[in-house]
Image (cartoon, helix red, strand yellow):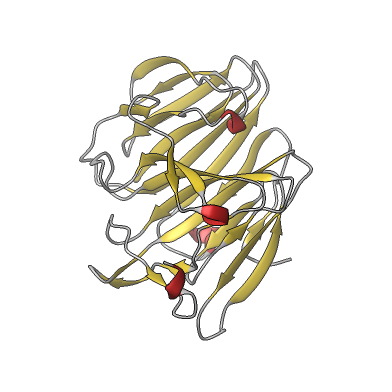
Length: 264
């Protein structure tokens, strides 16, 4: 199995724990919790900032010394409604107590403490189409660079219809040369509908030194340390993914694969 593909380590509780140390990079962390009603998850942000995303289900959330009440709306991520999210600064405790079965993502990256704890959704998150034809997909931008809500983190959701491609045409963001391109590590948390389906993700460099093509299943995570990283959803199965990006500069600038740049 590719070292870039992470299968779930459990079916409940903490099922993914991507850290800079175990990913071999410097910025992005990603934890995923699948909780039954009555279960809880908690932690401390330390030197990182975090964005908690209620992927689906409901939970009572406390963070940064505040009670944020019951968060979550959609019971199935493929409802495509805007997610409930919470920005948590460095050096803060957090907890989520499930009131229904729920999936909670914790997206992390180094923080400077310049932003306060705040809700990031659902208000202000609007499902937007990107691309056309079989390259059409639908985006919920949670914390991209047009929103000054974080020091490092860039977070977004993408819904790819069955038979379509996304993160395509192939592009990369693996050089620190702003404004031409920025260096951003990235994780993809995948879901498939129906759940027994699969998708395809390729991560590759133009010189061929990295070229991994992975079959992704429900709840898998893919690491993108560098290179291009397109995704495909087969006929009959739609794909969701939650993207987390971070690097030296909180800007998203990318370059298309020269072979496919004519598609841009």
